[in-house]
Length: 326
Image (cartoon, rainbow, N blue to C red; front, side):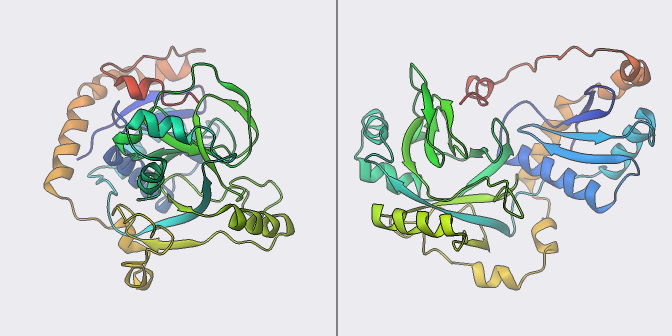
């Protein structure tokens, strides 16, 4: 059984905390928990908000109380197994790297001790899991950046970064969906709008999806930008197994497994056999949350308190501590 700790988040929300280290398995537990609770809803629950290591459950206290909610949550999530394999939704993002589109590409290449072409090949060479959305509407925090491309943020952040800028900050990479200040190293730009309030679905993707960066030329950028402006461009979305690295130059062409994946039902993406590594993860998570049942004996008192102090998580990795900074 995957352990988790329940903490209070104000008078109408709780956090299900699955650990204190950012990882694909932790994200898989969060996604599995959200899928389980959405499939078997609890009366009074309003919304689920996934983050790096926890799932916020927002509820109406006039409909369901804290004690009843936590009891139902624990019952429904008993025996939870991480969703870490299967079929995923992969959103292809065209990116023009370098030049005026990516003024920091050469700095990233120099820091990595490789050519700009190698940086592009590595950056576009596999799919990135969206751990969570935050900072700006449509800003996706992506996991899985190759360690060779980890690059410190700018010493002095820029006061404005253009919409669609693709950057690297420390151990993460992502897209700025709107014009914004920021300190990440900008290596390219996409003509696609990750966030458009006038679109039926304002944000192109969701936590749990994957992004695949597809290198394009400046001419292709201009063409797609024109199509986006006219409302005729549609971002390509495929279903496939999203964790396999691909060869340089083929990021936009990879379809291995996609045809078979699309023939599979949605249930295939959720029903994942529990492996030995999953058992290890569950054991680690259970050990981390040992004692949470004792802490919940005073749950009603905590829920009724006017304020709840945040408790810092111990042993957090340095790269996780500043993960939210852009």
